[in-house]
Length: 283
Ligand SMILES: Nc1ncnc2c1ncn2[C@@H]1O[C@H](COP(=O)(O)OP(=O)(O)OP(=O)(O)O)[C@@H](O)[C@H]1O
Ligand SMILES: [Mg+2]
Image 1 (tube, rainbow, N blue to C red):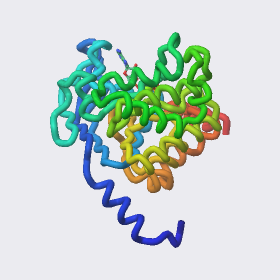
Image 2: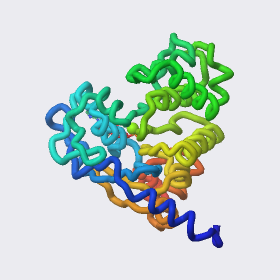
Image 3: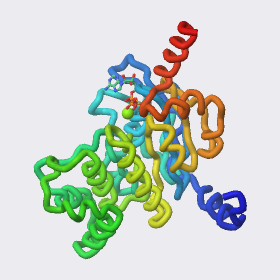
């Protein structure tokens, strides 16, 4: 890494210049009164993996749902700020219209159609497409190529597959809509560390080999910062820090609050703070 040639790095930084998604100072209120996002801004560059980090209830899911316009069903509303994709305002678009523009969300908690097979689940992702069976089959093969496990399980009812497989189905289904940008909410949730590594590894390959852009929300800062290019840290509905993933990994506060404890898994900032308080009491 130390002697990495200059050219590829420059190329990477160049390709990361163009902003696809821009969230500009948004405020989100649930039920007309609960202010959850208090002016969140972020940029997602084309071809990058951008991580949205933060503990329990920080506002990660709310931010992703604001982008895909999924807040209404939760009685949530963007009351300030703007969201644009390729420079076009998108906050009033239906989720399906956004998919047509190339933005698809993989929801937290996976959400497969349990009674459909793995392959049927994947094919539901292609419903907005009009480019014919041949192209869809080619993408199905692409998905199976990245997730060989899904090929083995293609005829299994999704409800009977493991948590890791269901996460793969959820990502695979998103890929079937031929997106440009994938909003991925908490892919590590409830999965064993080895599976988390595997899934992030696949996300990275999809990014590098197929050029997909990712915005991923994660409590697991440690893993996310190893795979992402850039990170934003959210706390109580505000971005408290942002920077290149490599820099955040080295940042003393991030190390202490997020990375130091991460061996134990999904510690939130709040947990760490109470832990520190406890430590003071004990010492
Ligand atoms: N439908 C809702 N109505 C009212 N409050 C909500 C609703 N959904 C979320 N909230 C509140 O908004 C805040 C942010 O929640 P959000 O789900 O965006 O956090 P998160 O960062 O995704 O957390 P986690 O890591 O636990 O998934 C929390 O305080 C939560 O209680
Ligand atoms: Mg969430």
